[in-house]
Each structure stands twice: as structure tokens, then as C-alpha cells.
Image (cartoon, helix red, strand yellow):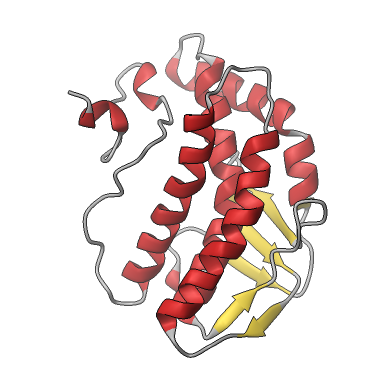
Length: 199
């Protein structure tokens, strides 16, 4: 799986430095550090809403990429565990995004790629919805933003996985959620941002 991904390394059979439960439990501190990093990088006080959106996106990307890349490169299925005991972990890069994703177990899956992709999406969505629904870093976030990001992150991970295995990129994902990066100096909306669709 790792050789197909542009920046993530997948590590099987062991836990990495930060179990997903710990990453989630420490998301307030993760947001604080990312806000400070953004403020220093852009030389302005960064709105905390940006870090809040990015940290949720990063949390969701851990199971999304593990599931999507296993399905695309398989026939495998990654065990993501349960919301109470997710079987995933990560190492963060200096930029405070996941650079390694660890999983404890991988199992054989059907050779039918579409079936195993749908099974992977179902497993991801159960965990991702639980993460997004419980996410609280002291910043107001609508249910549309939260649950929209669950679907957006899956579609982006699957798009990357399919492109990495020869299916081409296709159009950008038309997102329901916004990462708010446009609020920083010199930045603008991402391709597929809902703000662009509204103009």
C-alpha cells in the first residue's frame, strides 16, 4: 500500500506513536498547536476554526486512507476496530498531519474490487461518523460540516487510491465541507470547495 501513496506510509502489525483514541482525546491540544503553527507561518493570528477543520480532516483521513488503499490495492480489508477501540494509530509529521498510519490486522477480502470498496466505505463510515459526531474542540461546527467531512474525506481518499493504482484522477471531489484555508493570507478555496459552488 505504501508504494502507491504520495506521502503516507502504511505500517501493519503494530501500533505507532499515537493510537487513534489518543489522537482524538488530545484533539484540543492538536488544534492549539496547529493554530500556533498557522499564526507563525502566515504572520497573523490564525482563526482557530481552520485548525479545527484540519484536525477533524486528519483524524478522518487515518481510517479513510487505510480502508481505501487496502481496497484499491487489495484484495485486502483493514480492521479499523470500533469507535471505542479503533485498531489504528499514526505518527504525525512536523507539519502536524499524519505521515504514517498503523493498523493491527489486515484480512483477505473479495477479489471483486467494487464490492470490497463498498465494504471498506461502510467500515470507514461507521468509525468516521462516530469520530465526527463526538468531535469537540471548543469551536462551533455544524452537523453539515462534520458529517459532510466524513463523506468528503472518504471520496478524496478513494480518488487518491484509484489514481495511484492506474484509474486516473477524474474530477475533483465536490465537497460538502470546507477546510477554511481561504481565511489565511494568500490562500484561496480548494478545488471542489462548496464556497465555489455557491458563487
